[in-house]
Image 1: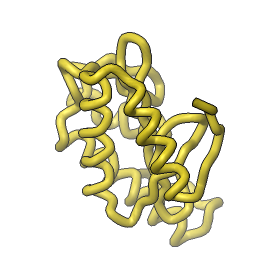
Image 2: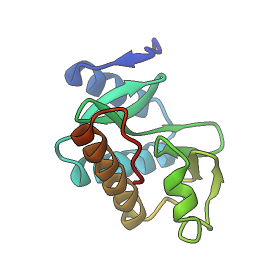
Image 3: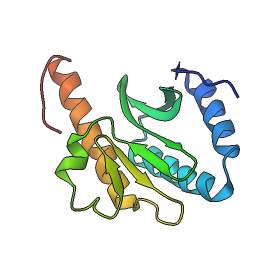
Length: 139
């Protein structure tokens, strides 16, 4: 499968994401599909896209979140470290890096935490779009 860096047309992105997830082992595929569906329900205005050769969502023209599967874990990228730092107690059960939550199919991120991240990202994007891209806002 070709790894596009960026795809902004939703039908093409959706087809690529479907194929990407289909190629994963079933437990990983199921965990990432559940994550994908939770993101889509929480941000119905967001479009599926590909960013940095990973499945992602774009909201109001901006990167919302992305996710992907790796050999020994899955990752959820909230596009910045602020949310992870602000909610570090809620994410204590997961391995984190500066801007990533790592999880497994055996221990997925609870829907309420995914919804929290997505809503905070949408609020952040709404504030930036409303004030112009140069505005510095806390999500």
